[in-house]
Image (cartoon, rainbow over all chains, first blue to last red; front, side, top):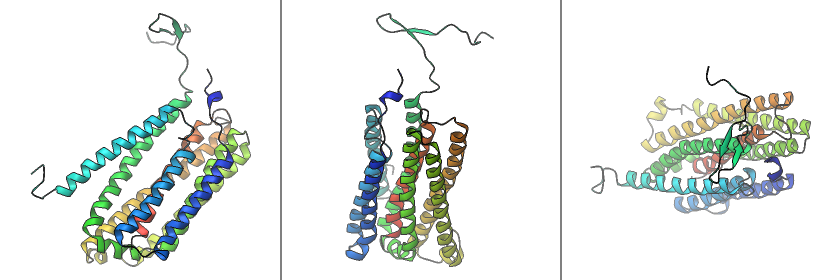
Amino acid sequence: MSTQNELHPVKASVYFNVFYLLIGLTVLTLAQPMVMDLNLGSTLIVQLGIAFTKAFLIVAYYMHIKSSSSLFKKLIYTTIVLWIVLYTIMAIDTYYRYTPNDLFR
Amino acid sequence: MSNAISNEPEIVYDKQGNPHEVVDFNNDYEGAKLGFWLFIFTEIMIFGAMFLVFGFYLFQFSQDFMDASNELNRLLGGINTFILLISALTMGLSLVKLRNNQVNESKKYIWITIILATIFLTIKYFEWSHEIHLGIYPGSPTLNAMEHGTKLFFGLYFTMTGLHGLHIIIGIGVMFWVLALIHSGKVNSTDFVVLENTALYWDLVHLVWVFVFPIFYLIY
């Protein structure tokens, strides 16, 4: 029952392909302020959009989640949902603190 | 001692009553990776909380944050982004090489990663030195005289890039440790989870920078 045999092989070519994609996205990140003069909200949407795309590529390929067992995939999905719930609650709480809608007043 | 190690195999029974021998878990590949992922989640909770704080103050002091962001050196920040990007690749390649039993190649890529990480820290040193030279550091009289939002921006800047830099320093230390383990043969082409977890750690360091860079340097 060796787990080694079940391991997904990692290929250098995958690393290089993802690397080129990441380089491209990083160039976009740096070019955005020079190409498009956006207001703060739009800048954040564009920049965070690129950042989340890069994060997806890193987690899926560099951190091997794409080729991992379903245990790891489920762990990641569950944790992401948990983070969103936790941080949304904190964000709502902070937004309404010291206002008439403050739950803890 | 009653719990002395016996040579008898430990037997457990499943629901159907079939016996199963309990085998050694010390070399549990999935377990080692699972444990490391749980550690990564705690790291993301730490950095995530800081990003959240940044988000709140960005909306309260938008103009101050944008003005302060303009003060940062985007060229140096951009170079550092590319350095981390390349180092994440070399770290991954060292794992590929070790799994293909190309031990010396693997060690070479770890050395390249260490050098890139050191260059990152050196550039960070010059960036911080410049800001400290201008009198901008947490608690400085110059910074305290500035707008409230500017103080918060630079406070968060030094805290977050500082904590990130600390992770880079720890990462370099871990890489030296892995090099020693590879050298002694304890980490090899069939038992490589230590290197794999080190690569995961390095990807985390890269991942954090992917978000730190745009929110601090590019919101002007």
